[in-house]
Length: 75
Image (cartoon, rainbow, N blue to C red; front, side, top):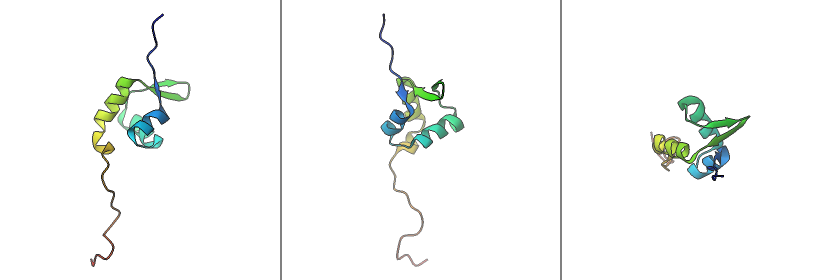
């Protein structure tokens, strides 16, 4: 009997990408990211994780987040 390929859980994928589970769920809902559902559980193959990473590499980059003018800025 052959070895089964491993599927990755939603939480494993979110942690590996450094994003929240909500972000991954949003990518499924808004972008149609490929995945499997087993009942209410969401699973991803290694290929699907790679495609998610590739499609959203710009979102995964760690860029500084700004929320407004710098303190002390006279504007």
